[in-house]
Every structure is written in structure tokens, then in C-alpha cells.
Length: 546
Image (cartoon, rainbow, N blue to C red; front, top):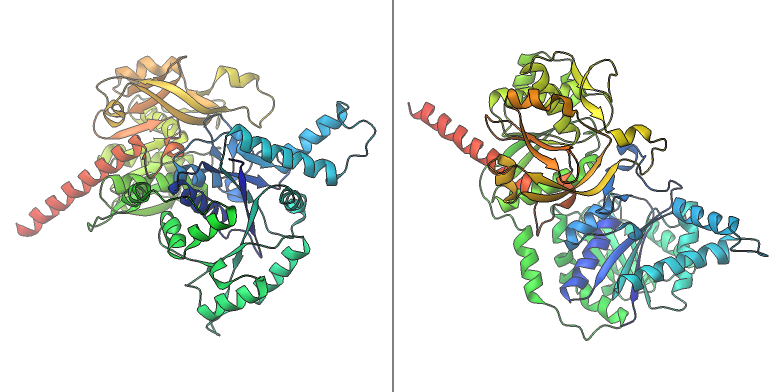
């Protein structure tokens, strides 16, 4: 079957959730046993988002092949339970780099290279090649940014040209605001945006409307009129509590049947078993009191910086039949507090998690939280930097290495965390860290082994610094467990405490967690937090009865 294409555009403003919409559509198509995958175009001139500040762009997601991509790829993989590769990510930086390289090598001899047709032709060729190489029935193309932006205008034009020769369905995600003082959903902004889209030569097949509440019928009718669509092609996308329920919500509006019809695939039958499996994986039936997980990080003012962490915690909560409440703590704020104040803030925690990050800012506050978890017996999970700081805290307070630190922060410290040898030769910052999936071997009999249920694992990485092997003997003698090592070299992959559940991993297991396949390490962490919460409730109950 020749590949069909679905192009998802956005009107009015960014941040409407095109990634969730695109993922939901791909999931719907998978219910019909269609091989559907999303790709994304981002207009920025960075080659990728690996060097971007999390406050600027949210989480940097890492694929199995080591590609550093937009956080929407995490949403894609979580919805579809499939690994993607860097070819699915197209940026302005990649495209312009490639076309300039082609021009310099003589690929356009005799031509004055232009946006149209040379750049747009290259985009079309790359999109079609990806669809062919992946043997896709449907390729969904999410266009980053907003229609009308200079940054994505040439890509929108390329998609218009693609529709001249291939089957393309255009979907526009728009925003329907509602002024609190008026109490009425307003369509005028979307009307103007749709007019602009038609000026680009594109008539959308569907409009998906993001709104604070369910779309009014009169609002739907009005938008349909001005969009030249029948009313059933205007789809409601109001704020929901669980993004994983969006495919079913769209299907309740008959969107799946309408989309298949537009794609010329109306004869396809839905696989109810796949729908039921998805429902089981995303439905949390727990009625218990939520456990509290404190996330102590340096980017907590923008929760998108830890998108994969929060989603992995949700997956693990459903798998453990519990609910969780996230307690976001800015690590830098903890640095100005004494031990009693830190204890008071963390006292309600059933589990403490320190995620990844770069730079010295806020690390001493993280170390205070780690010390609290170790001393008070609170379940702990450290990710990347969270493992490195776990080692530093143990070196200082248990091993007596008072100036223990990381070479990333202080070149004069006792470097229990040091830069990897191969990283010392690196000159370029972009795409040069230890990235992507790497294998490790877990020591049997450890908590890490109990969590994974195997000795051989593969997790994704993103780091330049590692535990200094010169201190391994000291750590082992002082009962810090080195529970996993990299398979093909001597890098430390996991550490843990002997006293209670406290595991640090150099990897980012959150990147591979999905509703249908939660991260084993996150599941074990939440299980331990549930057990601690239950034990605490029992002790409190005994006190009351006494």
C-alpha cells in the first residue's frame, strides 16, 4: 500500500499540544493495525535541541540511537510503545546544513539555489524516503511552531506541494478562547487563522479545537461554517485530566471513521483487543490515599523539563495500583536552610527522586535531600546527576572524604566524579556526550537486580561525567554497593544503599518507560514508597489506638 500522509499544523499560538494530538492520532491508527508513525519538523536553526536550556525548550529527549530530540518524541514513544530514530526528527538546522553541503560539493551546479524549489524538494524527498524506509502505511508529520511563522513557512509550503502528488490529510489545531467576563467561546481568532492558512494554499480536512471546556455546539457550527467543513469535521480537544485518554475521546466523536475515510482506508476494521489493552494500561483503579513523591531538581519551575520523569512515575503508579502526589522542590532553595528545616520540608515524602541536570547550581540542596533520604530510611531514586550526587554525599558523610565533589563543579575537589577519558578530547559540545542506549550488567542479589529481574539491561544515557573508579575500593569497603557496570567497559552504571531502597543510575530509565511497559526501576521505587507509606500509617494507627 502506498503511504498516506497526515500533516498536523497549529494556529494562533504554540504550546497547544500538537504532540499529544499527533500521538493520539497515531495511536488510533494503530488500533486498526496500520503501521503509523509520527515525525516532527522544528524550525529552529540548531542542528538538534541537545545544547538548549531546559527552561527554553523543555526536556531534551534521547532516542535509542543517541539522537537528542524534542520532548514530543517522548510522547510519541510513550503512546506507541515503539522506539524511534533520529530520521524522524527534522530541523531547520539539519535541512540548511544539508542543502549548503550539497551546494558546496557541486550538487546544484548552474543553479541559483532557492527555497522553492530546491529546499522544498529536499524536504519532500526526505519525508517520502522516511515513509519508504520504515514501510509505513501512514506517516504523520507534526509541524512545529505556528502557521504564519517565518521559521516554518518553507516547510508548510513543502507540505502543500506534497499534497499535489500524494494523499495528504491536513489537520489544524487551533485555540478557542473564552473570556471569563463574557462566558462565551470566541471563534474570531480561529476564523482569522484559518483565512491565513488558506492563503498558504491549504484547506484543512479537520479542525481540532483546544479549549478550556467542551466545545459548544454553536461554536462547532460557527467554526465549521468559516472553515468550509461539515460540523463533524470540527473536533473537540478540551482540557482533560489524562492525556492517554485522548485517542478514545477523539474516537467518541467518530474521528477515527472520518479520518480513515479521508485517507481512503474506510474498509479497515478496528482491533478491539488493542483498544482494551490500552485501556487497561492507562486506567488507575486505585482508591487509596496518594503517596507523596518529592522531586528535588534545579529546573522544577518548568515541569516540562522533567516530562519523562513525571510520566514514568505515573506509569509506575498505575502498575502498582496506587496514586501519587508530586511535591516539586527547587533544590537551590534548600541550600539556605539548616538541617531541621530540610527535614521538615521532606518529612511528608514517601519517596524522594533527584533527576538529571547540568552545572553546580542547586547541587548542594540535592545533596541535603539525598542525605535526608539515606538517614531517615526514605526510598530514593537518583537519575544521572542524581546518582553522582548520591555518591558524593556518601563519600563525604560515610567515607570521610570531606571535600568530595565532581570535576564538573570544582577542579580542586577530591573528584569522586570525574570526566570520562574519551570526553576529555571532545571540542564540540553538540551531540558528543555519551548518548543513547548502552548495555550494563547488574550484580545478582542486589536491589537493582530484584527490580529488573535480570542481569543484562539496556538503558539510555546522556552524560559526560562518571564515578571515578579510583574510589571504588573505598566505596565497597564502606558498604556503598556498586550494583551495575557498563557491559563493554568499566563505567559504573548503578549504585545503591544496603540499609533500604536507595538506587542511583547513571542512565535515564524514564526515557524508555511507557504505559504498556513501565520502567522496572520506577516500578520498584514506587513499590518501596507504597510499602513505606503503609508501614507509616500502621505505626500512626497504633499510636492513636494506644
